[in-house]
Length: 227
Image 1 (cartoon, helix red, strand yellow):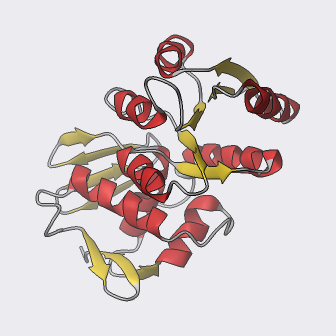
Image 2: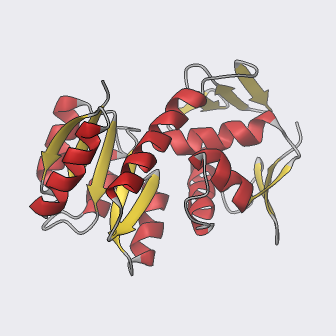
Image 3: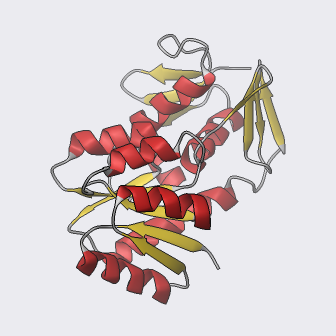
C-alpha cells in the first residue's frame, strides 16, 4: 500500500483529502504545518506528498525547497487559483504537479495516481540504458548521470528526460509532453512544461543558458540534441 503525506492547515480540507485517498486505497498521514511536514517526510518516508503552499509559518515553497535538498519524493502542490507565480516557483523548485483550490477531491486522487504511475512507467519498455554524449539515463533504476556525476531528478523530470532521450532530434510540442507525463490532458498549462524543462537544464546542462542537450524549438516546443 502506498503512503501519502497530506500537509494542509485547514482541517476540513485535510479530512476531505484523507477520506478520498483512503477510499482509493492509500495509507494517509496528515499534518498541518511545514516543520511537522519535514519531520513526517523524514520519518515515515511517504511515497508522495500532497502539499498546501499557503501554510502558516514555514510555507509550502520553503518545505519544497528543503525536501529537494535530500529527497526526490513526488510532490503535488495545492495552490490558490490566483497564485500563478507560486505555482511556477513550486514547479521550478521540483514539485511534480499542482491542483488549484477549490478542487475536486476525485481530480486530486487522479493526479496522485498519475504522478505515482510516472515512477513505475518510467522503468518500463525500451532500452534499459540510454547514453548520449556524456549523459547516461539508467531507466530501470531511474538514475541519471552526466559525465559520471549522479543527478537527482524528480519522477516527472525523469519521465520527461526519458521521453526526450529515447528519440533524439524529435520535436515535441508542450501539449504532447503534458499528455505524456500526465497520461491525460488535465489542463493545457504549458508553462508547467517550461518550468520542468528549466529545472532539468539546471541539473544536466554545463551551461543552462546555452543548453547542449535539451534544445528549444521556438514556437513549437523542445527536442533533444541528436546523438
